[in-house]
Image (tube, rainbow, N blue to C red; front, side, top):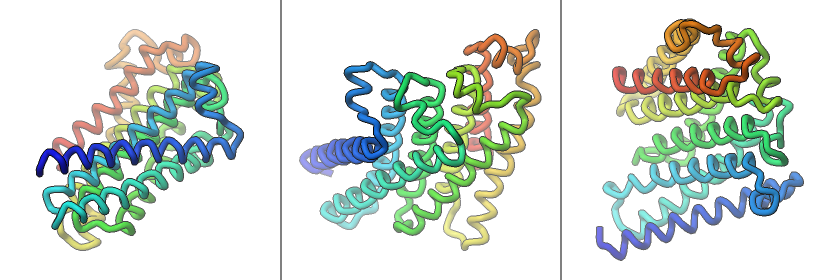
Length: 280
C-alpha cells in the first residue's frame, strides 16, 4: 500500500474517532450530561475515564476493519468498508453503554458521568474495551457482514452480563453497592472479568474457522465454557494464592484495599490469556 493511501486511512481513522466523540457527547447531552464541561471545567476523573474507554473501544473496532486491507479488492472499497464498519462500531458502542447501565450496573446510571465515581467509570470503560475487542474479531473476518457483527455483538453483551452476574453471586458482599460507594477494590475484579471475557470472545471469533453454524457454536462454547469454569476456580484460589494471609472479601470491603482488588482483577485477565493461548 502506498504512503498516500496509508495517510488517507489515518485521516479516516481520526474522522471516525472525532465523529464517535461528537455522537457520544450528543447522546449524553440528551440525558443531561455535558461531557466537555465535566472533563475540562469540573475536572471529573470519572467522566474522563469512561470517555477514554469508549474511545479505545472505537479504535479497536476500527483496527478490526482496517485489518481487512490485505484482502480488499481495491482502495476505494477498503475506505468504504472501514467507514461502514466504523459507523457500525460507534452505534454498537453507544448501545453497549445503555445495555451495561440497565443490566450490569443496575441503578448506577450516570454515577460515572455526573460525578467522580471512578469505580463505576472503570467498569463502564471496561465494557467499551471488551465490546471493542469483540468487534475487532468480528470485523477482521472478510466473510463477516453487518449481520454477523450484530450477532457477535449480541453474544458478547449477553455473556458480559452473565459473567458479571455469575461473579456477583460468588462474592459474599454486594458488588454494586460497593461500586456505588466508589470502592475501587470492588471495581477492579469486574474490570478484569469484562476485559478478559472480551479477549476470550475475540479469540473465539477469530478461531471459529470456516465450518458451519454448529462447528462455530462448538468452538465458541469451548472457549467460553472453559473460561467461566476457570473464573470460578480462580475465585476460590485467589485469597490463598494471591493473598495467603488475608481474607479477600474483607480486604475488598472492610479495608477497601485497591491492591487486593487489582490482584484479583489481574488474575481474571490471566485466565483469559491462558484460555486463548492453549485453546486457540
